[in-house]
Length: 489
Image (tube, rainbow, N blue to C red; front, top):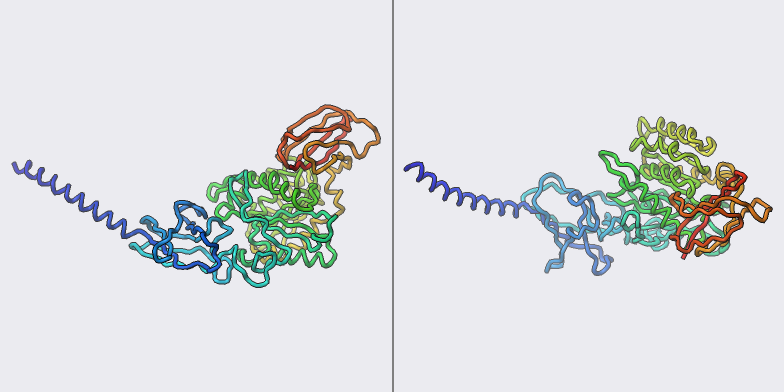
C-alpha cells in the first residue's frame, strides 16, 4: 500500500515539479537574453537605412536578414539575441562591409565585444559609417585622404563567380580627362580599403594615389588602379584557392575568375585601358600577395606583372608546386618583396618560391626578390616599398614581356575590341596565305573553338560570352602565332 501510494503521490508531485522547472527555465532563458539597443546613428545616415548586426554568432554576415535591428516607439532600434555564454564579438553595418560602422574619426574601429551576463541590455551608438564619413582632404567624393584622382566606381559590383557584391575603387591618372589618345596599364589590387584612404583602412593606407600622382608629375606615363575591397569575413576564403584546415580558403580561383572574366572586361570596355596582357597587372600583400602569385601563374595569358608583397606562403605549400603544374607559357615579371622581421620562415619561403618559378621555366631575370632587414607585416612597410616595386615592374621595353616565350611573331586581329566579327592575320609574314590551325581560348584557358584554315580568315564569335580571348595559330611549318581579342556588347 505504501509503495502504491508513494507512486501516485510522486507522479503528481513530479508533474508539478516539471511544470515549475519548465516555468523557471523559460524565465531564466528570457532573463538571459541579450538586448542590444541602438540609440543613435550619424545625422548623415541615409533615410530608410536598415541596420544589421554582424558577428561571431552569424559567421560575420554583414547583411543577415535574421539580425536586423527593428524600430521601437521611442525611435531607438533593438535586436534581442538568445541566451548564450562566453564573449560576443560584433559590429553594426548597413548591409555590407563597405558600409560598416567606424570610429569617431571615421576610420576603422575594432570589433565590439560583450561578455554574456544575466539578461543585460546594452546601449549602442554608431559614431560614423566608413563609406560616408566626410573627413578632410578627400577627393573624388570618397572622403578621408584619397586624392582627387580617386573615385568609388560602385559599392555594389556583382561578383557572379562568388554570388556577392563588392565596392570597387578607381584611380585615374591626372591627364586622363585631357590626353584622350592615351591608354594606360591597369593595376588590379586587393584590399581596396587600404590603398587610398585612411578613413577606410586598417592600420594605415598604402598612399597609392599620392605615389602615382607624384611619379606622374615627375614624368611617369601614368597608370589606372582598380582597387577591390576585401570581403571582410570572406577575405581568407577568397584569397586562397586551397582550403586550410583551420583558417578556410578555397574560393581563390573563383575570385581570380571574377577579375579575369568580369571586372577586367568591364574596365576595358568603359575606360581607356591598355587591354593587352602587357598592360594588365595584379598586386597584393599578405594573403592578397598569395592570391596575386597564384593568379599570375594560373592566368599567364592575362597578367604580365605581379606585385607580391609579404605573401602568406605558409598558408599552403601547393603555391610552391603550382608553377611546375601550370607550366611556363608566357613571361611574367614577378616582384616578390618581404621583410626579415615578418616571420622566421619568410625569407626561406621567398627563396623557395623563386626557385620554384625558375625551375618551371620562368626567366630568372623576370623574378625579382627583395628582402628588407627592417620590414614588418604592416601597411607602412608596403606603402614605403610601393614606388620601387612599381618602377621595377615597369621594367624593360613592354614588348619583351608581351612576347610569349620570346617569340615575336603575333596575330593581327581587327577590330579589337570587337562585337563578334573580326579578321585574323599574321603580322610578321608577307605571304597572302598561311595554312594551319587556329585555336580560340576563353579567359580560363579552355579551347572554345578550333578551326583548320589559312590566314587571313574571318571569324564570327557573336555567340560567345563577352570577355577576353586568346587566339593561337599553329602553322603547318611548326611556328606559333598569338594574339588577344576583347569581345564587347
